Each structure stands twice: as structure tokens, then as C-alpha cells.
Image (cartoon, rainbow, N blue to C red; front, top):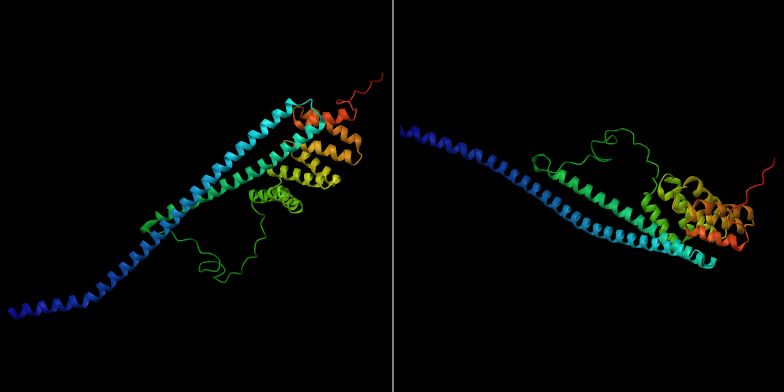
Length: 307
């Protein structure tokens, strides 16, 4: 009996010793897998922390830019009220005031473009954070796997399918393109900014910035003495973007360009139209002063009726 018990105990010991290496190998794999999961979780936490810091910085910049826009808008409003108060002043003073207001509007446009860009960047950061959060909450506590990219297994190209033609070059984002054009314009880089404004009109013709871009193309032509092209650009603002904030100035500049080319009747007609359409604007006051200096009646006399 004792011999039988000793034999059984010996057999069990042999079996345990034989199974020990397999159990040790499985345990080692589990530990390695857990270490990898922990490493990935630490990486995700680090990325999220970096995004949080970047979001805080962008939010501060957004607030600063918003405050700047509000200050510039208040200054423009104050200057408009001042212009209305000096309606009876000389034409030179009105022209100087109009130029100052135009400069303020230019700065306001640039600030608004920066504000739009910052807002979109913050939205992109928030979307990244949501993606990170979704990855951390995937099954088994492991981040979700991203879809395979071109050239990796699982794509049509890796499976032998013919590669598609490369996509055509895309236009830069609207806010980036317009901000670059406005910055170059304020820096007097007129050739470069004219090309960039033309791209805004070409690629984003239905946007609000397109009307402003068309106007600034006219301004560049007007400042360089290219009055014929300036008239075309100002006319495009008035016909295609009649609700633009630049419309009163565009009509005044168009009339001034016509007078510069000796087109007196057209210039007078556009100034009269400006006064009728935008009577309370500084541009209308400047037109009144110009017409008075030319000895021209502000409103055309009605034609005599014939029996």
C-alpha cells in the first residue's frame, strides 16, 4: 500500500514539473501584453495632456483676438459718428477721415480672418480630443486600430489593384488664404496680395470674403493708377456683392476713377447714386463735397415733360 502511494505521489510530481514551463511561458506573455497596454495608455494620456495645453493656449489667443476685434469695431463706429458730425467740413477733411476709416476696416477684416482661423483650430483640437477619448474607451481597454493607409496591407494597392491617379491640387483654406492676402496688402505687397485676393474670388466666389477680396483688388489698381481695371473690380463688387460693407467705398472709388479718366458724366452719375443709396455714410458726404466743388447739383433735375 505504501509503495502504491509513493508511486502515485511521484507520478503527480512528474506531471507538475512537466506543466510548469508551459504555465511560466503563458504568464510571461500576459505580463508582456499588460506592459504594452500600459505603455499605449501612457502615450494616449501624454497626447491628451498636450492637446489640453494647446487648447488652453488657442483659447487665450482666441479671446485676445476677439477683444481686438471688439475694440476696432468700436473705433470704427466712433469714427462714423464723428464723420456725421462734421458733414459740413471741407472735402479734404472728409477724405482724410474716410481714409482713416478704410484703414480701420482693413485691420478689422484681418482680425476677423484671424478669429475665424483660431476658431477652426480650436474645433479641430476638440475633435482630436474626442477621438482620443473614443480610442481609450474601446473594448478590452485597448485603443482602436486606425484604418490602413495607402501602401499598407489591406489597401487596394497592396492587393494588386492599380493605383488611382493623384488628386488635383486643392485650394488653400479660405481663412488662411484671405488672411495671407490681407496681411500682404497691409504690408504694401500689392502684387502678391492681388494674386491671393484673386484666388479667394476664384475658389470661394460665394463667401463673404470674396466681396472684400474683389474690393481690395480694385483698391490695388486704384492706388497704382490703373483706373480702368479698378472700375471693373469696383463694378463687380456692386453687381455681385451688393450687400458688402465695401459697397459704398467701391462706388465712390469707381466714380473717382471715372473722373480720373475724364468720364465726367459717369463719375457724376455714380456719385449721385452713392448719395441716394448710402446717404448717411462718410463716402456720401465726400461725394457731396466733390459735387459741390464741381458746381454740380447733387440731384439731377427732372426732364421737362412734353405734351
